[in-house]
Image 1 (cartoon, protein in one colour):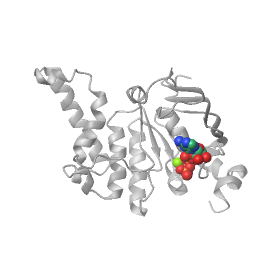
Image 2: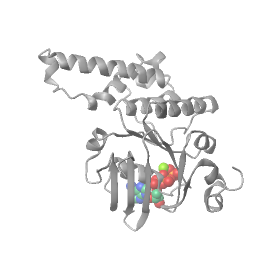
Image 3: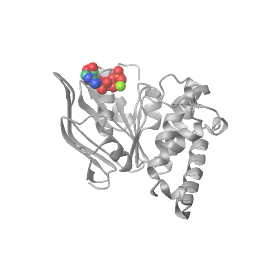
Image 4: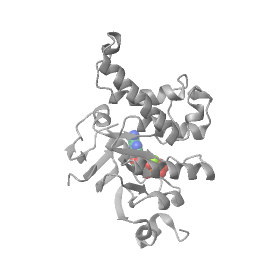
Length: 255
Ligand SMILES: Nc1ncnc2c1ncn2[C@@H]1O[C@H](COP(=O)(O)OP(=O)(O)OP(=O)(O)O)[C@@H](O)[C@H]1O
Ligand SMILES: [Mg+2]
């Protein structure tokens, strides 16, 4: 199954007596947008945190590009091609927008930090390449006009796009987005949908958690549905919209 950028097998996570994820298995193909939906407390953020390595899974296997990563650190998983955003915005208020996104890309620099002190050419070339990539990311996420502003002065919607931009700068194979539309109004959600599609078009897979069903149905190729930590359905948006178990557990009759 090495054609999958992410493969999750029988993942379990317990917090004391609470089993937050039970035997969860799914895979994401390169350039695919996968949705992860379900009621509050169904285990979506726990899944993202376990995939990212915030805490170890209780059991199960996580493969990135065919390599098992469940025993690796959070940082090592970023280097392996997994980047994520958080459910609540977490940025560095004193930095400029451009500086923060550059920092997100620092993991992609291979040269030793001292190379710049000694003026070694390959370091300068690497940094130039990162600068160019960061400019593309600022354009893609609509942040170019505020690139030189400090992070603390931009709007809360821009803060959310900045989290995405920072994660993208790590050049991930898969980007995990935990409720990226939280606090966004209608035209900002439209921008977010366009941004997610643009990320996909660049060949990066996306795993997106959202309660905003119109957004999920618009951007996702496939959707996994959790309820009480277990997968109750997986399919295309139209399959999920018409799935009786999903309607009963989460969607109601409205979607
Ligand atoms: N660090 C933790 N310690 C103890 N219990 C936790 C922890 N994180 C999550 N849980 C529990 O695990 C379950 C799943 O929580 P999780 O945050 O993954 O849900 P969610 O699907 O992201 O919900 P929401 O839609 O509200 O964000 C809940 O019962 C929650 O209380
Ligand atoms: Mg959550």
